[in-house]
Length: 99
Length: 183
Length: 92
Image 1 (cartoon, rainbow over the protein chains, first blue to last red):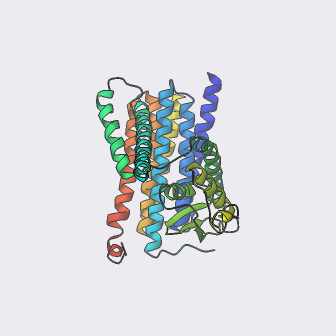
Image 2: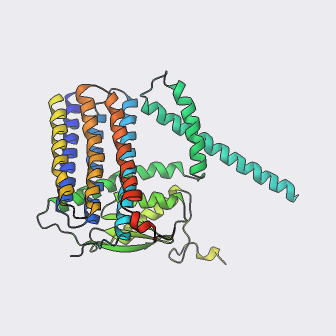
């Protein structure tokens, strides 16, 4: 039981770190496109870690399935959303930042 | 003779459609079990909803073929690469110098129009250093976080994997294995 | 474990508040919209954590609704609000 708790804590902490990195990227990156990179990738990994940390504690397989389903759904939604935002940004002529 | 063969062709088509419809019914039913956490009472609502969802999905998403083995193999590939992507972008965000050199590239698609392209565009956004910006006629415009890295070969690998998932063979000037079939 | 869940949920909420800085700064409407995406993912994580902490599985459904709302909001924004001027010149 304690081993599961330790594993779960590690996963949850890592997830929190990824969320923090995503927010930092949102604040620090230079333009819309790079911020989208930071948000979609870091936050999805963060959510994945949180889901994994909760799934190892779950009582039944159905709960694990539901958590994974929620994760998959959020991933699909955020990938589609980021594509839509990036496409419209390009259509409106927002130039990608160059070093 | 020709009438008979055309009829059997129609029969085959109906069979394929029924198989896919059944497959989707099972998938939606499975999803319903997950969502309701296995509650038995909920099937009073669930059964009609699964049927309606299948009908709507058959209208909206035309049937496509999909390899089960390659779909299962895709999962570890996807998880590993999205972890890599998350770690990479997190490192860039935490690094005080922000080591990025972004740019746009046009990736020539060999996948046929349809669900496989949409799937590819969505996956690209979650993989390391790439973000799909526009799905054109034959090109996928991709925003790259670091143009110094070799992203094209990674995209080609992803395209091959997606093609296998949807039972598509990629034949174009770029792939040298299928050229002799044209003659 | 209970404390860990709750404190992590609070940390994520703090993350959201910090992310609001992007809404204030902009500079484009798209940058402001990004925070909606941040909300979509983070609030789902917060709800899942609270569901575990308070032992209320119903909160999983709230998480699902949040995810759905975030997606719908973004699509509406891109299609209706942000694109008005351009759609007249679009080819389709």
